[in-house]
Picture (tube, helix red, strand yellow):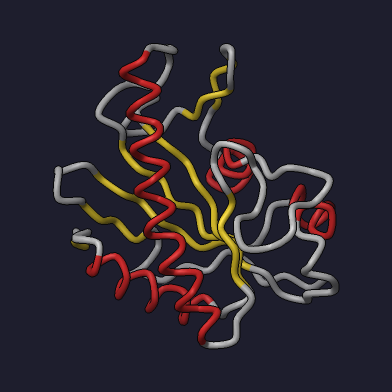
Length: 184
């Protein structure tokens, strides 16, 4: 497969947003990690022989550091998962309506939500480490350490064959519909 380098432009890399509750959302578009390249058909078996894929990383700032396992933290993770899924489905269907194969990965299971699940789950934390070089803490589960938010970060991923400029436009349009405002 041929992959272009990481997509970046002054205006959109990363796309920094803030939600209605004041929590930050950071979105960036990348070429796939080596893991995704090596395992694409095992992660997304419906996506045979796609020559160009892009990975959209969505990082949401949590109200809490996610380094413990308590009922409050588990409820926060579920809230952030639901918020990602509402945004992710809107983005995926917008791009699919433009005839670009797109899927979001369930952060809880690692399996795609719009395609048949493969034999290998996707690992959002590993992809963020590979593409953004954020460190990971290994506890009962692995947690990212965001440079500004610490462990108060919830990662999620969307994979698409749409060109980055199309993905960026759709992200900004849909983010506004979700009450997420772009910040400089």
